[in-house]
Length: 301
Image 1 (cartoon, helix red, strand yellow):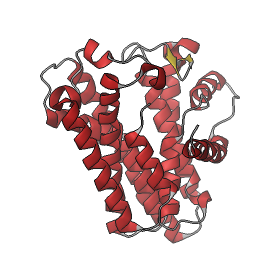
Image 2 (cartoon, rainbow, N blue to C red):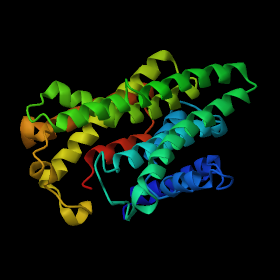
Image 3 (cartoon, rainbow, N blue to C red):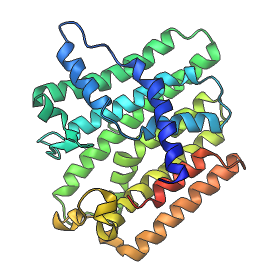
Image 4 (tube, rainbow, N blue to C red):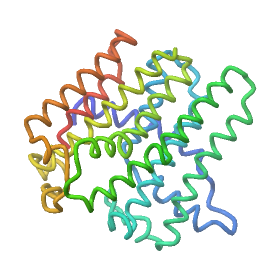
């Protein structure tokens, strides 16, 4: 394990301590759906989206982490709900995630659907509660802007819209680059954009820096997906921890199938360079955020 990977583990543990207390307790007549919600939320993962939010907040001068913690919890709830629904038979029909039974296999399909719905709704309950309790008018104004960003990036003009286009794209073997980039921008990048942008807003960053952070996130999200496509072709299955070649086997249209490996590698580098340049415009200091972005884009697993 590299020094960065050790640091990443420590950061993930810090994030977990901040977000897990926001989960509802397993009690009442609704106990089973809450148990199902907690099962998936607490199943591990790198906590990248709330981590991105926290790092963006601190990168741009944010100090009081308690004002952003509800949003960190909310973004992870939204991400978790999307995974529960993705795994359902009507979607990807997966039996395992992170080495454990998927939600609908551990419980049942109806409970899994409701658990996903519950996490999505509870994400907004969590943010709304923090807004209703906020005494500082400036912070409240920032929270209102952050709430707007969260709802849009997670919705039909963000992640859900991207997922729908992806489902339609699976039936269309002639999908073009414009459609593919729309899917990447929304299905993959939207929640990363929400994370980095909300971090910037809650830190009190200028509109210019908020826009730069959103563009940085867009580049990271798209590059992350293209790198994933590259690894599916040339990656090491032992390192990846999963089989490779599934995109080819399933005749899935990817950036690699449209542009080839060489052009795909060049595009990942271009997006990465632009993301780093945008960060340098906001701060010359080399932070964990810089390292995290580069790690994700250039990863081999």
